[in-house]
Image (cartoon, rainbow over the protein chains, first blue to last red):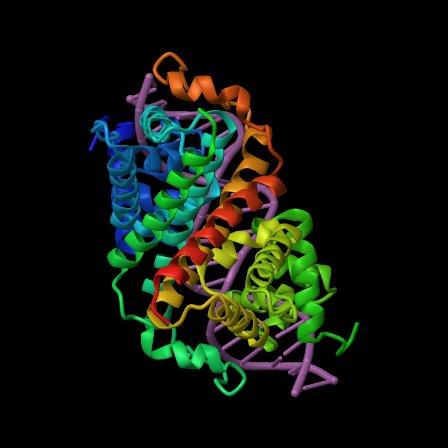
Length: 205
Length: 205
DNA sequence: ACCTGAACACCGTTCAAGT
DNA sequence: ACCTGAACACCGTTCAAGT
């Protein structure tokens, strides 16, 4: 346990700690303990905890897939890739939401997203409109999914809502959970892709 | 400073503290100090900090607007209402993302959202598909907006990305910031509403 | 260059005690 | 019923000191 403390080893230990025990469990002291080192040793490799967390997020960001020529398929793959990354480390989601992911692979992924939208026939402001709308859907869905996966089960005092005041909500209750998370994601994603296709058709090339 | 410590007063002080100094600044000790009371006095009104934060979120949740009969206008108003609520207290967003908002007004708002989608001609699983997709977009947009508003300005080491590797991104740079946040939100919202109309048209009544 | 130890200024929460 | 004071088990970070 001497000198084998590298940035990569710290990041890996931090990720493992967050995955197993949650974001609150990640403290510099506890992380140091897991690495067999004093907490203050970490400050020789990262200026502060925020920088460490950014490095953890950057580490789990995958390389974007190769384009196939079919923009719809490419954007679907990019969407799935993003969702898989988050769902592999869901407890890191609050960090990812709090600031955009930096780093080379994040930039390459953004480039691939833009490139797919360009192949859909978009450019300029319309392309950015489509990108931000699609990206908002994907990000928002991941938040909703995570709320749904952790909420109703762990929380004891769920459903304090009186259904007499909310007849429509009550009537929809039996449809809740009819689809799984994968299915539901693809339905909303198809709606985004259709909207993008419509936008491309109505935009002068 | 005796006995005038009510749940409402605590919630109001907590909200003011978060709005002014940020979520990290909200500690039971500091909140107590702001109220002229020991931190431990707060535990007589709230079981813990999480419950206090939930009460703060519930407090800023507005009553849903009255329906007009035009589902598209109603859903637009509900979207704007949601966005205004978040943007009035942006530093509370991480709390809102971490768990769904409970309480009577949140339930009434959900009911109004479902009711608008029903008036669009949807029901059952298709209605829930539309709702979750629309909700994901709105929520995701708010995250992106907040990232955009706080990120590039405050952070000194922005744009470490080499644009040689990312030509499409570089080419789009001059279109960034072409639209303001309100405009951009409505463009994506219109795409959601169009997609909902298309879904309703293709779903058997 | 890399790590330690002590210290500073904080946390959330419990619990017995006061009024 | 409502609040206080002391205590417990923690935090992130700075800084001088060691090797």
